[in-house]
Length: 520
Image 1 (cartoon, helix red, strand yellow):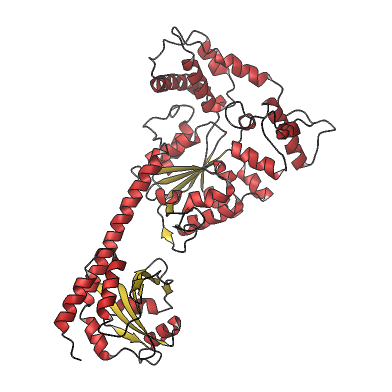
Image 2 (spheres, helix red, strand yellow):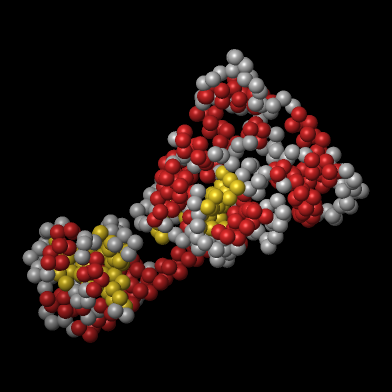
């Protein structure tokens, strides 16, 4: 039967260009090609440089779409050969070309026939179209000649479909980012850090030295010293200032969810994964990722974080594709990571990677000269947030009391005190009588009492006693202001996780769990 090549070309072109949804178009192509040559399966694939594999993106079997097969990883030498190939070829174990014989061995389908059409745009191979028929030696040189005539329109259609997919992906990412940012407050550091020319001068000198680099930074400091503000300052002074600043508190995420937050997941990765989710690393691409409370990161997640820092590649949960990320990582902790390394609770290789450029942020008690400026800053800021006019000057003597106070909660405690004062403000001068309450609380018996002979020396039992005392002082309250977690200076999730590990129940005053914590 003589085939009209012009008609074949025209109808094949109309079929492949019938839809931007490439699988839909491929169903039409299958119908057309199967009337001119043997055909049971039609596979359209693209070259994936990240894993050096041919990745199928559309698959039609017996005229109907189906799930694409797994990527075909190229053996040594075959990757370059595949990218350079221009003419269609038949895969056969008896082919003269050793590369074709190697491909046949890697596929391993001895009882099928495959015809492969390379698809090129501007001398670049962007993919291949593979025709497969059951039985050996089903394709001939006439089939090769016929298929080669439609290589150009098929390549153009594939290029357009890939561009369309990219636009859809970017649209979905913008929608996803918009939804994410509505729930994520991204604070931006201004040109001035309070105390940058006095108590934080040494810190800011280090910030300006490291900001232009890609170096990983580790921020040390007590709770409330402003580690996030310094991380923001590094980002704002860096070449990445126009990129995203994404943050994650490692102590606030459950251990079984930390990988999902950092790396995201693929659709169907687990029950409830109805769509692809990008993790914090992908969201921070081109910018900075701030990992607070890095000492709370589980050991398994430490391994994965180390791998990402070394390779700059991430894989979503449930996925195999390696995704390159361009992210600067800043970490922060109030814990002694070096001691944790010695205890085996923090990986030494990760500590070396993170501690490349450490910055220690001094507590507020070591930079008392900054307190007046911080008070004025918070008074102005909180007045705007609360919608009240800026109050009159502070009553004489109040600033001296503020300056002389020890501030164990550091800048965060000062900020909270100013906000409470403004909430109670009814005109006149600011007195900061709330400071007396802070001082009274600090005068209560310390949680850390002198050891007596009856005090347990077993570490786990000592922690149980310590936690019970904290819970007794807060009437069983763990979360929020005045809770046991705040009293102990740790995150509530960290406290509950440690209690569970120690076999301790917890709960409200009327629950059996609360009766448990009141045991001596």
